[in-house]
Image 1: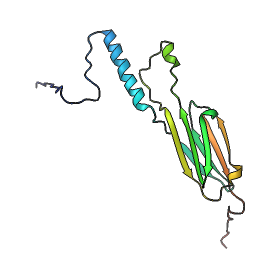
Image 2 (image 1 turned 90 degrees about the vertical axis):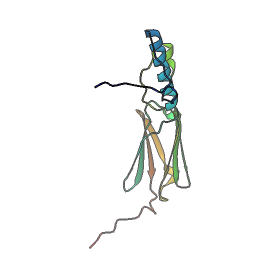
Image 3 (image 1 turned 135 degrees about the vertical axis):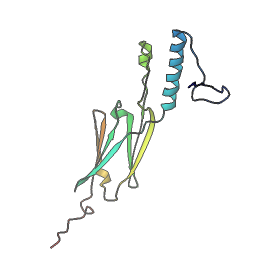
Length: 152
């Protein structure tokens, strides 16, 4: 069985045809491909969050690897908690001669909004940041928290 591979050079492809003949041009081609991937991923960072509840509080944990508390803003208005910030790509490695061959981390601006029930005590919402994790604690108002009714 004979297989013939034909390529129509007029059709668009994901990457332009970059055939290489030596190591230098292969290295340049790889640099361009990875630069395209890095540029395509910019602005695609969406942090994951988890929401839990106890009798007294709501707790929101947000995974923000590689970020610090200064990179994050938190706002609460009209029963909506908004967490925003920006995860920056650090280019200093390029100056040290490091070239990345694969970058799967997302970078860029983000904003996550989470509606909370109207029983949140807005004056006592607190936040802490440790080891790349943001923890927001939203206490419930005592008079609106409700009570458990025992079934007899």
